[in-house]
Image (cartoon, rainbow, N blue to C red):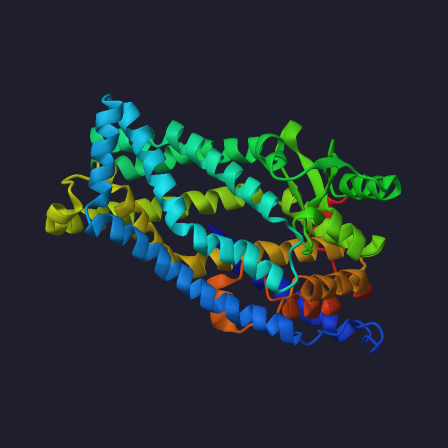
Amino acid sequence: MIRRTLLLSLILLMPVGAMAQSAAPPLSATDRVAVPEPSAKALAYHRSGNLLWVANRAWGLLVPVLFLWTGFSGRMRDWAARIGRKWFFVVAIYWVIFTLVSTAIDLPRVYYEGFVRQHAYGLSNQTIGKWASDQTASLGITLVIGSLVLWIPYLLLARSPRRWWLYTTMLAIPFIILLQLITPIWIDPLFNKFGPMKDKALETELLQLADRSGIEGGRVFEVAKSEDTKQLNAYVNGFGATQRIVLWDTIIKAMDRPQLLTVMGHEMGHYVLRHVWQLIAVSTLAILVLLYAVYKLSDTLIGRYSGRFRFTSLADVASLPLILLLVVAVSLVMDPLTLAFARHIEHEADRFTLELTHDNHAFGTALVILQQENLGVPRPGRLYTWFRENHPPLGERIDFSNDYRPWESGQPLVYADRFK
């Protein structure tokens, strides 16, 4: 369905774009926003990030293999069984032990990538105390949520060994929706301070823009993110009573009002165009494929290496590293597809804000600021885009912002029916 919709959209939009380009007057050099060349620091950050990406994927495969090949996962299950005795507590205790050991093993990598490297490239203001506090909070959330829900897929594995992957996927849908609901009010505030907008005039304009785009009852929050980072971000999240418009204080300082309005128009586009629901649908499909792959591949591996693994069934909680190993491996194949969909909806959000604001120059210059402040590379190459990029490359987005002006030639807008 998604692929068919995408193809139909391309077929419908290509003639519009062609007519707009032929009928609209050419932009002068001063009207167009130039795509800046990446700085030397941005290129170094990009290259080191590519090396880290490869290392992280290899590490994500190696650690589960070590847990399995050494039989350590089976030993952790035995420890959990001696402590918990009853099945539910065995699963929860195993999760706690597994998470603590994995966190300890992974700590040097996480510290380097999330703290040392960000400071080395001038992207972070975070103190070691704040970093440690955030890591502790994240660990606590992981321990609690995993302890509460891990028993569900393992119960399904035991009760329905041939259909557990389908039932687990079905139960994942309400869980994902619940996370979308509670994250803005219960999880995000654990890491940063959310407060009212200090610039009330800007807040009024944002709410007016939200009303024009069909978002009612939205609230605007400013996040004191500069205590952590120098990077820029803004977003719209939540459902119903938890719906909110969020701007980091870093982006408020870096951009002028027209630029901020176009950036928030992009974020509002995600909400109005129901991209959250589309992402939930795509995530559900991805989970289904991943779990089915685990189902099909796990029996062969367990049958061959059960002696080393120290378990004979996927329903044994000691199989968790095997499940994670297979998920990571299959994800490497699936990532280009899921990232392609993510880039599609980001492109449509760009279209939405341009049609909403008609301020191409402000949006183009906002993208330039994002590139420069976040050390982006505007044209990173196809392999990077396919395997790592969940947004269209910034160079392509700036080009689109320069060229997409159907209103100047009287062409219909794709999202005109969404605006008030």
